[in-house]
Image (cartoon, rainbow over all chains, first blue to last red; front, side):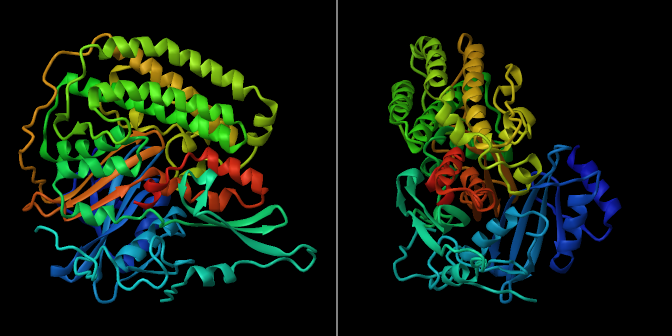
Length: 154
Length: 387
């Protein structure tokens, strides 16, 4: 299905979503408090059936004081894919966990927590993944500083 | 809101304890960070009851280098060598994922020669990776001869790579807009000589391991996972296809010249370790089939369509491209601000990272020896998990 049609279909099912401009495939923006409800529809609606969470990551946007969370979904049956993005406050980055819908999210969200410091509500096992338990700070944030860091060319 | 952050120590203590009826005591065993079956630095904590695995806690992070952070300061061409180091057994396919994403974002057209050579090289690399996997799986399960055979094939394919690319392991060959070097004049002749030899090798693999009763007993019905579960757990590649889901990016999202050749997507029926083994063996045959169809008529043309020092600035927005590596879907997610020749944020969706997690779900309830078979059948490359 081409992106335009897919977006039109999703809009007919959930009227509150917005298109997200600037993405190479169909992309939606959604408020963080509506995330879980929308994701459940995307996974379960027979016309959509996004049964595969390909990847989940976060973008740090210090100028806009937020983290943009990106979920890339794929429907194995229909063969279409979709970006879902949501924004959370940079000072209080709490977002509902989607691991009830896609179990792999438990693993992917832990990575984002470890490196970006986004907190996932109702995540069963939120702990550091790559770094030590006592590591201070979140290295993928743009303002992360470490005494061992080299100054890189701008 | 109930965000609860735990440490590994707390997680270990919070895990279920022995039933009161049991007479044995549960204990924790650290497998790794240095263990022969991990083929790298990976720590896996096993909670054991006697020889039975109660559950598994993978602890990655021993090879974590912050690749994504480094990439925020690199141009798109400079990112290519970093992808080699993630999964050094699928280096060319990893390069291709970056090149594909950049080309799609900028609308760069390549020619038939470039796409054909990319496809042939990728399939050679898949053969190399699967041959090595076959060897190390044999070694993990106690068949040391297999290890030597697998390495032998890997080296022979490596010679072909070395002639054209100049490297045997970290080949940054595919560039945005083309290739790093043109193929050597005798490349086609050498590859054609290699095809019957590799067919013979696969036959040898079958007689050496596949027919072995002990080997079969150690893989059959071990670590069974059905298709729906594999999808939910984020698996891709041979692991997903062994569970019966015919998802292969070469077929579903044809790139390169995969839409111009005949090949089958190999799927398994049961989803056990044996199917994962067999899917890879069959994939080697399919790879040879693809190369056979392409090697005789590599089209003429230029091998690069961009000047090497051309500055590439991606348009603002989210870009994603993926290729099917030997271990599954390798994706490159780029967020560009449209002003600088660097990504604002770059994320690698690496197959081993997602494939790794299934051990927590399918290894529980088996013996330690079965855990070895299960983890071996997942074909993990540790730097690809840790990034």
